[in-house]
Each structure stands twice: as C-alpha cells, then as structure tokens.
Image (tube, rainbow over all chains, first blue to last red; front, side, top):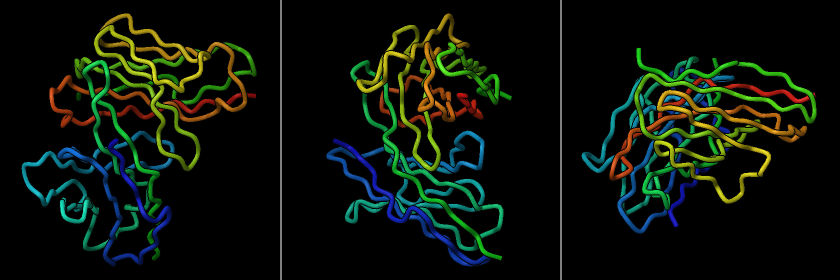
Length: 116
Length: 115
C-alpha cells in the first residue's frame, strides 16, 4: 500500500534561514506526490507536485522539492524563510480507488514556525 | 476565477440537530471530495463522487451522508451531529485523470461547532 511519512510535526526556523520539511513515501509503483500548505482556518493550497516529468520541481512562493527514488523522499525546501511561510504543510500521495478515480493519502503534517 | 466555494464558512449547530454544508465549483471537474479535518490533524476523506457515482470510505460513519444533484454542487449532511463531529469540513475537486497526476483543488472549508 502506498503511504507518506512526514518527519517532524513541528519545525522552527529563523527568518531568512533554510526551510527543510521532510516527506518519505512508500510505493511499489512510481508515485505522484504533492505538497500543500494550509494557513489557519483556510483550505489547502497546492505548492507543487511531482508527476515524473522532472525530479526537481519548483512551486509557488519560492518552494521547491526534489524527488529521490533511491531515498524514497520528496523533501520540501525554501532557501530563505519569510514570516508569511508560517503554516501547516502536508505531503500527499495519489492512490487509485475502486471506482477508477484517485484519492490522496496525506502525511500527518508539519507545522512550520518562523522566528523573527 | 474558477474556484471551489463552501458555504457557510462557519456553522454552529446543536447536538443532534441535522446540518447541511454546501460546496460548489466552477471548475467543471468530475470528481468531488469531502474531508473532515480535526485540529492539528491531516484531512480525513469521508467520501467522494465521480460524476454521480458515490464512493464511501469504509470507516465513514452512517451519520454522514452526501448528495450531488449536478456537476457543480455537492452537499454534506450530518444527520445527528455529536460533539465529536466538530471539525473543519473541506470540499475538494479534481479532474478525472487516468493516472492520478491531477491535483485536487480545495475550498476554504466550513468550520462546524456543535453545542
């Protein structure tokens, strides 16, 4: 069964420092992987997705992620944290359903805190 | 702008009093999802529609029902809300892609309070 694991439920970084949020996947087939951000009392917004076209994926707000098959990882990075990056981040893998559609399996989420 | 809209954004109901949450979309997507998200947790899929085909998750309580009268609208009915049903309810849509590579688009959510 496909799954994702996010290490670190809480991550704190200083403003201007590197952001690294970890996501490891488990899949017997090439996975489709997604990173979402959620601000308080809002829905989820797509940051980026991996669909096998390129291993380094650039997203919105300066975020990027690299798919590493050998490490079964899809970690999210940003070179320089801004205060506005403080939010909850979810990694997800798309899995087929019995109806022929797809659904997400989410990681448990990582809350990012940015310190002034 | 094409989008997913949820109404109301905040809903207060009483224990045991039925409540309906609504979701509409202008993306013309075939697939619509309902999630429940409790504080500091990941969204939990309740069910989804592929066109009018309803797909329930195995662990979704019978207390939760859904209707999709047309492509644009989908409703979540909670027949007898309990205190444990207080949560954020998220609606999402997706195209019907063959490979699962299309992302889901989320609405802003409805926060349900049960008194």
